[in-house]
Length: 155
Image (tube, rainbow, N blue to C red):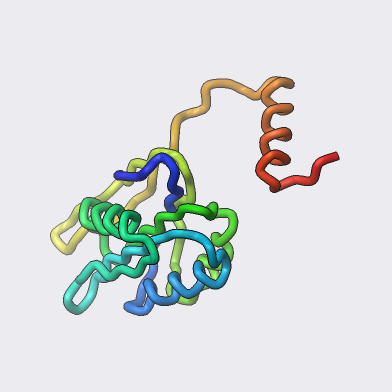
């Protein structure tokens, strides 16, 4: 996958042509100052990649990933100035959304199956494998980090 280091990605599956518009409206109403792009691989009718965005660079990246993965009814959301945690539950509650494969800032590999009919996402590799178990200094770093970025109260 192509992903800028300063962006997050959400990969999912949906089932209807209005997916991109509904996701766009959900993101802009949840985190108005975010920059984002959505591409959706429609898998019926003309089978077009449908896209909406408020950021041209992210739009190009979103389209390239949709083309490279090329799996029916998959969608790709790229975010800046927001994190998946800010919008994930709202995205899951969109009627067309069937599933979320990942929501991450990590590098991602998409595992694809191909048949005569088409292609489908089996799953994703999100980041790296664990390298150990956190120790006291790691716990302290985690707790400090969450407070530094405003997700936990100081105290």
